[in-house]
Image (tube, rainbow, N blue to C red; front, side):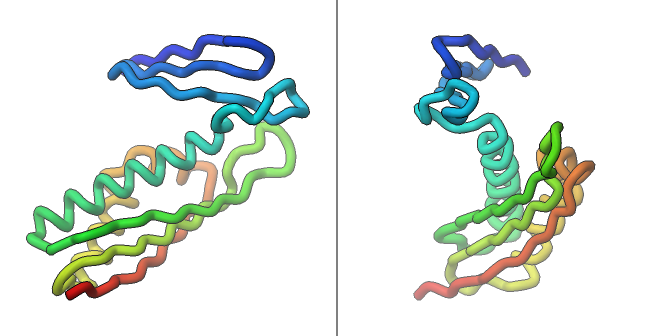
Length: 139
C-alpha cells in the first residue's frame, strides 16, 4: 500500500491514496490551517469506522442476512498531552434489515473487532474500544 501527501499552502495538504483517490487534509487555525479539510486524526477514526462497516456488512451478507442499511457512529477521546493518541473509542452500529437475527449482528461485530478490522486492532493497542448496536427491523 502506498500513499502520498503534498503540502499545498499553510496548513493545507492533498493526500492521494495508492488507488488514485484524493482528499484535502487541513490543520486547525491555531497551527495555520483554514478549516478546508479533515484533520488527520478524524481521518484515522473514519478509517476505523469504514473498516469495521465493510467487515460487518460482508459477514452479515455471507450469513444470508437481509441488510438494508448500516450506520457506524464513532466517538473518541484523546490523551491531553502529545502524542494525543486515542484513549477511548466507542462504536455504535445501527443495522437495519428484514428478519435480521440479533446473534448474527453481534457475531459480525465481534469478528470485525477481534479478527478482521486491522484498524480496530491497531487502534486497540492504545485505546479502550467499546461497541454496542441496535438492530432495526424493516418491513
